Image (cartoon, rainbow, N blue to C red; front, side):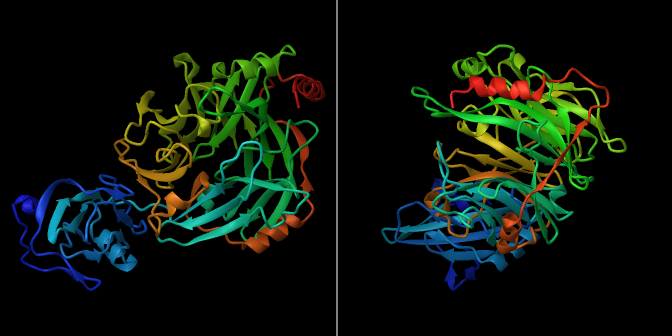
Length: 523
């Protein structure tokens, strides 16, 4: 593309699109134009929505020419807000699979056209899954406001609400919703999320059917919290947590979300039974995640001395010493039992703490977030994405994906080539969604922000994206059908005992533990 760097660009063919044409003469500028969002050098999926953007340079007129090595004519748009025609964009990307697309920006100042260096993006051969779900949540500390769980088609800009917590909102009772997670990328049509307080319970969606279950039993700490669907069986692993917020007066990170107790359970959806997985003494287990073959459950756990009444005081005063490691247990589908607990990654040995372990679909790479301490990394500036190559046990630092601010929750696409993750890199306050290409050689590439129809959306949006998950199929029930299911009486799950194959040392009597926590907590 050396045509850019002669003194004047003289095009032999004037490209025309949307009624505008590329200037025949322009003086080259030896830098990239300032744009938002800036996705230069990102690898793009061939089925992603148009990457609309704003040109931030000062000028009187603006022309943008987007083309590929195959399609030199490409797309031409006028204006400082570049709105790319969807049909033309799809044709361009499809023809450019495995090659590059270029974006040339022309700006007229003082009556003269200038041409900036090309924005360059490679187009991958592999598609992304067409749907993602996420929760939209405002910045909150002591309480929460308007929450919604949404579904977005990333091949275009279609978005719809799966459920909104204002549906049953009233002056006396509020409703919290969180953690929409599908089974096997929603290939089965099964997914779930939690409703708390008003009409509380865990909502299970199965095709068109919606039901609500109370997962709390007298033998477990709480109802299910962080979920993980088994990819084949109608089973869900959960953490059960006693979680509280702690507020700092000096730290720039004003809030710390901490567990004062946590275990793992398994819920058999068809039998409506809850089984213990991990409730060992002195361990806080959380964030379960299955391997793609369903034969291994990964999770994080921190070792904590819970033998005396000073537990809460020690956790609050020494919160930076709480560190979580990654463990696994094998799972036998025929007997529905788990094997011995094994260490996968000792984060505490390097003075770090791990969260959100997620195994790639091919079973080779374990993606997780790592911060200086704790496990609720969405609030930690030190949190970065990390990866272990389980074939070599090498720790991979994903520098191209990370920033100086928070990277936290993440998920793999069904083909293992794309990583969806949340980041606060723009302003440190609001979480936005990014996608990064992960090639077959184990390299992550420069990420791009979730495309928006209006490029200014992320600047105006005063809510954060939370718990993003990929799906190959959309959620079927309408918001009204989901709300109707939430309005029904919850079915109560039954306790079925332990699911550990060989009985291990268990936690002390549940009622004793509850009493200890009740006496220790200041509220």
